[in-house]
Amino acid sequence: MATADDVRRLALAMPETVEIPSDGFDFRVHNRGFIWSYPEREPGKPRRIRTDVAVLYVGDEAEKQALLLGEPALFFTVPSYDGLPLVMVRLPSVTVDRLEELITDAWQMRRQPPPP
Image (cartoon, rainbow, N blue to C red; front, side, top):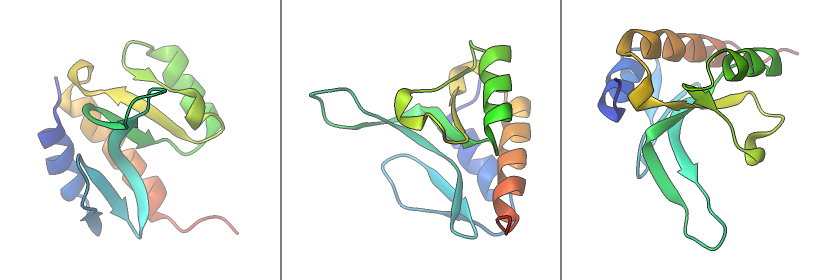
């Protein structure tokens, strides 16, 4: 079971990572986000920052679909993220070791310069 504190510790262990001030957590490398707290939006209600759910950069649609289909208890998405290489991770459902792997992968992809 991982927590927002684990996200913070693991993300800040990555070189060149910057934490952006927010109501939850928001980590970037080279000004490109790789993991942040989920800003849940429900119609007719104010946005709520969920620190028990992380939005994770996954690189591309194929990886997104593989995670969503392979581990639906751990990963999910919402219509507002359709077409974006992002998934949501349920922190209480992920081990710290797996979270470290996910954060490292996201950091590595965002650290690279975008393709020409």
